[in-house]
Image 1 (tube, rainbow, N blue to C red):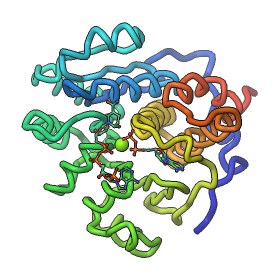
Image 2: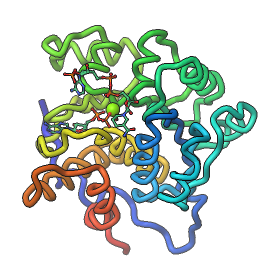
Image 3: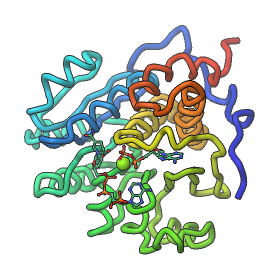
Length: 279
Ligand SMILES: NC(=O)C1=CN([C@@H]2O[C@H](COP(=O)(O)OP(=O)(O)OC[C@H]3O[C@@H](n4cnc5c(N)ncnc54)[C@H](OP(=O)(O)O)[C@@H]3O)[C@@H](O)[C@H]2O)[C@@H](O)CC1
Ligand SMILES: Nc1ncnc2c1ncn2[C@@H]1O[C@H](COP(=O)(O)OP(=O)(O)O)[C@@H](O)[C@H]1O
Ligand SMILES: [Mg+2]
C-alpha cells in the first residue's frame, strides 16, 4: 500500500489570509460526551480548536458543561437534550463530528438520527466511536456529501463485517465502496480509504499512543482541519491523520506514554511547519 509521507503534505494547505475572520475558518458542531464520558468530547473539542476551527460548538450532556467551559472557554456549549437548538446548530454547521463518548443509550440513538435526518449535502460529517457502532446497527445513506468514519479495527468489524484478520486492502476497499463513505482505519500504521484516491498508510505512530482518548483527539483534529480547509478535503484528512501520529512519535522519544493532552498542546506549533508559508 502507498505510504503517506510528510513531503506530500508539507506546504499544501493554505496559510490564513490577512483579510479574514473566524467565520472564514469553519463552523464546527461536535456531539458527544454522556454522563461518564465527558472527557472524550472535551479532548475532541480541544483538538479542534487548537487545529484552527473558527467557531466550535459542543452539544453534550448538561453534566459536562462546567468542566468543558473551564477546560476550553473558546468553545460554545449546548444541552444535547434541547432538540430545537440542536437542529438549528446542525443546519448552521460546516462540519459535524458525532460519536466521542456518545454512548449507546436511547438518547445517543436519537442524536445520531437527528444528525442524519437534518444534515445537508453541502456539509461534512465525521462518525467516530459510538456513532460508528450505532450506525453499523442501522446503516443508512447520510445526506452529507462527504461522510468520513474513523473506526478502530473492532468498530470497522462492526461496520464492514470484516474481522481484523479479514481487513485486507482489497476487502476494505470493497467495503468502503459498498458503504459509500470514506474511512480512516486506525491502528499501528493507520490506513486511509478516501474516494477517488488509492489507499494510503502512514508510517508514523507509536504504541505510546495506546491510551484512552487518543482517537477522540484525532477526530477533533480532523474536524478542525476539515472546517478550516473546506476546499482541500484530501490534504486536510491526510494532514490531520499524519500530524496526530507524527507529534506522538516525536514526544515518545522522551516519554513512555504520550497523552492526548500532550498531543493537543503541540498541534498549533507543528501546524506552522505543515501549512504553506505566506507569500
Ligand atoms: N475519557 C473518555 O471519556 C473516553 C471515552 N471513550 C469513548 O468510549 C466509547 C467506546 O470506545 P471504545 O473504543 O473504548 O469501545 P468499544 O466500541 O467498546 O470497542 C472496544 C472493544 O473493541 C476491541 N478492540 C479490538 N481492536 C481494537 C482496537 N484496535 N482498538 C480498540 N479496541 C479494539 C476491544 O478489545 P479489548 O480491549 O477487550 O481487547 C474492546 O472489546 C467511545 O465513545 C469513545 O469515544 C474512549 O475514547 C476512552 C476515553
Ligand atoms: N500501537 C499503536 N501504534 C500506533 N498508533 C496507535 C497504537 N495504538 C493506538 N494508536 C492510535 O491511537 C488512536 C486510538 O484510537 P481509539 O481506539 O479510537 O481511541 P479512543 O476511542 O480511546 O479515543 C488511533 O489513532 C490509533 O492509530
Ligand atoms: Mg475511539
